[in-house]
Length: 463
Ligand code: BGP
Image (cartoon, rainbow, N blue to C red; front, side, top):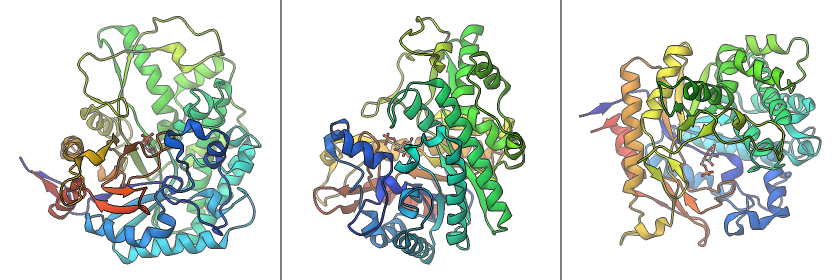
């Protein structure tokens, strides 16, 4: 069967500033929470490789863009590092950063690769984190000022903007499950963070529209469909629904519909942890929904009714409302421990069509992190990553089906272009179409999947 995609489909990949750029002497970058956490506890990071080097894109972006061209990209998403552009989080702009992002953007455009720019990818500037980060309402104002600076500096050429990447992750990682700094376990703070991120997004969208620029603005969400253990068991179904509210709809509903799910409002009220809502906030959220939705998809959630006792060692947690269950015989990526369930991507897309007004959307991340890819290097020095080709094509088949059924899905960006630094896995699991040899000046080599992706982009599909 031939899977043919629209001629104007966006083929490309995604990355982020903090995971790729690296730091060089004299670049003027300020510290963010990742730089700080790495200095504090390097042993927490795989092989003690930190965010300071990453894939050295700051120095190598021109070479990288040539490689993107060679693997058929017509678009590419990365993020501006807030702490590079405005080192203290508020105040003075770093001219070296302006020059860097200008050159990066111009080089992409000159090579017919449309830049998609995201404003926030988990990288809170340290001075703002010291004042509470997203728990502090002042951060919303600082973020909006930063966003405006970005629109004014780059909005003449960048036509696709995103306010956040996966805003639920700083909530989960920083304030519930301790995999992001500041590693708190306080649901009241988690709720504040989520509320402020939503408000910041709506305010940035408002600011963007007020500037009257010719482009569109959206948000990127990691959507994890929640499947109940037994669809005929109402307790399992209810548990899956509440997990969906916490982890998906807490951002999806405000971003696309302009309102928080009533189930979420009820839970935070019942627990007496509702955030402070100021006059006018909800109106701003209502009136500034997104033009475009980026969907990151890696894995589903398998949910059953709560059976285990509630952990008394801390306050309320989302998990007080459900348990996870292990789907027998599930397919798994052993390196990341994530279930591989290709149909999940179709279910998400169908949900956007049926319940979210068929919003313009695209797959903004999907990919497979694999450890020890060197063992697949062939005689020509190329990694033969057939597993990645299989992973991507299996997902694309479902994207294709959703489009056939009328879903407004406009593109597919794989995570990621070059192997890059990952938050806690460092360079253990590799995701790229292009390998990066961190022991050899970051030497790049296109993997087999990169060459395959070019044929897909050139032929608008595959068989
Ligand atoms: C997403 C993030 C990316 C990237 C990816 C892979 O959640 O947006 O930044 O890291 O996941 O995950 P990891 O690097 O943790 O394996």
